[in-house]
Image 1 (spheres, each protein chain N blue to C red):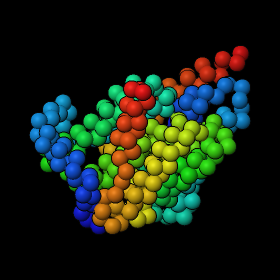
Image 2 (cartoon, rainbow over the protein chains, first blue to last red; image 1 turned 90 degrees about the horizontal axis):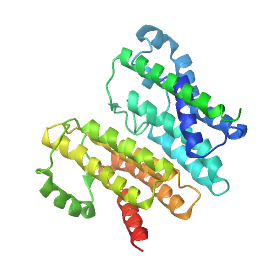
Image 3 (cartoon, rainbow over the protein chains, first blue to last red; image 1 turned 120 degrees about the vertical axis):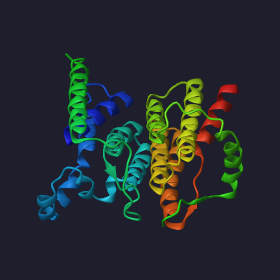
Length: 157
Length: 150
């Protein structure tokens, strides 16, 4: 799934779950950053292994351009942070961690994962998909959540 | 590690009971992955903190779909180490989704902590070949039943 699709979907769901009002801009900004920041993970590997990716292409290989933070280990790290923050501010804990959790879940649903990396490098795939279906899903998610975002923000006006 | 980790003696007690009824299950869809995806979407409903009665119904469905994905895999000879791994990951995601919205409450923090413990337990299972996990969704079901009845 593209970063844009992750950001619009994961942050919107979180804001609804955490009951964030449209004028609580700090929480909104936090959720948007949390939803997208995990994809910086890809950047390091894409740059480091750019010669390999130039040869094989990105399609079907993006799961190799990310760290174990994109797998089950990421759920653990995010969860520990959320648990710690929840003792001080449960709403912030949700807004800080849930978008990242949803990002990871979306990647698991629509892509190839190495869930027990770095302990085990076995690849799994929940829903095998053709490239055209992946693109269709991405576009659909972006459109649907863009509409929901507009409706959400229009509550202020 | 190439094999699927072995369950603990405690887990084998209820597994033996479930195995007796497994042959009688009817599978509208043969693909085990369907029941795993269903489990995730049912768990996501807990993000919106359903009432205890609805929670009991949902957890029952989630545990049933968790049972059915393995049962379908066994019935149609689709078992594999990758399938087991997928099942473990889906169970962790289900637990995370179920308890994350309750963070900040005592019960929510407790079950969320157990979910984090289960993630560590999952890595241990892969490394050691021993399946050691806490059935926290089942424990939460019992908790909901108790608070509904009392």
